[in-house]
Image 1: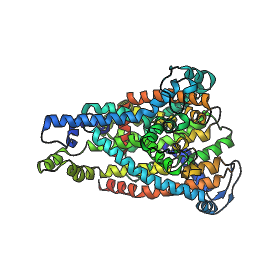
Image 2 (image 1 turned 90 degrees about the vertical axis):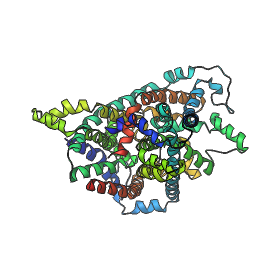
Image 3 (image 1 turned 180 degrees about the vertical axis):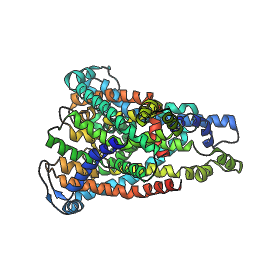
Image 4 (image 1 turned 30 degrees about the vertical axis):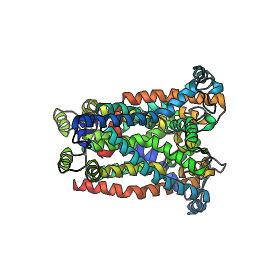
Length: 281
Length: 299
């Protein structure tokens, strides 16, 4: 009964992945047959300052974004856990940025900051700080904007996971702690957070994975990402293999493989832990 | 099926984390709840504000739609929606997206459900490695799939067709859907299988007549995710489509760099596209929550 699904995955995912792997070792463009290049593409990518800048930014951004995401989502989960019946209402609205297509959501988000589009936040921030930020043309303001936008868009997923885990915290343990005089902070620090540790790890893993593959959100939030130094590895793939007139399929494929290796380094410990859990269960 | 029901019994359990005020119960507690609700209202308003702003921009007269600083006094109009409908192919692109989404839902569920069922009833090395492979495939960057699809579609002369776009979505959806449905099937007791087999049902007969009806919540959940994915993923239709099968998000993204009248139409498009998606999300919230948490808490 599993055969059609296995066949689908093999044909529609396995075969394309195999091509990506083969092309990553070839000089190749669309419609042509490739010539072997050894590790030439990998060397080209690692030697290209544009790629190095994109890779550094992607990794650092993913780490900062993950930490911020967890902090924001956990705080909101704690709040939501205390509002009783109103919770479903809030959740419904808070989920909106996550279900809307990322490109569309990010466009609407970017408009709030863009003076070309009569952005309203732009003016508020200028009035409060007395300083005019070029949200799209300057590296750091743009980074802040990207962080806000991406956390805004990904927060609902992290929030739901953490909220669900929060609702499973053992009440009798908390009651016992309260009887022993533990305050809000110590209950959080010594019972709730340790209880949620596996879920924090899961959210972090998903968030890092999404961060390393970031593409959609950058299009509206950082229109000149390459010049300001805020571009991602996936944007590099898109630019070298479909834009810039280069159609360099080999180089793009090599960067795809590099990204997968990076993700695998993250995934293997997680999968190994799950495998061991299943064995002992 | 703890993931679905989690939202209800949880209300009772959630008191566990209402930790702050143990003394001065009644009033203190109510004050904390009110404060939390107040903060959450502010956060919620901030969360939806980009969409509200887009809706405002779309209903202003074109001359002041994106004026800097923003105008607050104007007479609202829906002209731009009419123009978007009449002057561009927006309706055509929406229809494209919806039909590709529906085709991918049908194909994905038909292929994934039997596999998920089989994997939920067997354990051992084979099952573990299939599930591990599915997990790894979920982590693949979309361009690693999109570029080979692009090249192959061009060679076969099927570039820019709904078929290729649907196939790409079916492939990408498969690992997640199998995982999700397997978690739902696992919650159905095996005794039901055994009873049906005893009554002379074949494996497939039982699957079709007994399992699928029991799986309605699971299939609905997976179907919603598959449907939404066809709208959400931008990179795949960006690479695999041109004029004939462009999806609505790709069309809107291409309008963003345009000048004023087209730009305001993009704002209208954003409103027209996000409102139905928001409604779907609100109506199906229970299923969405079940799907999003199921991968994390089980599996």
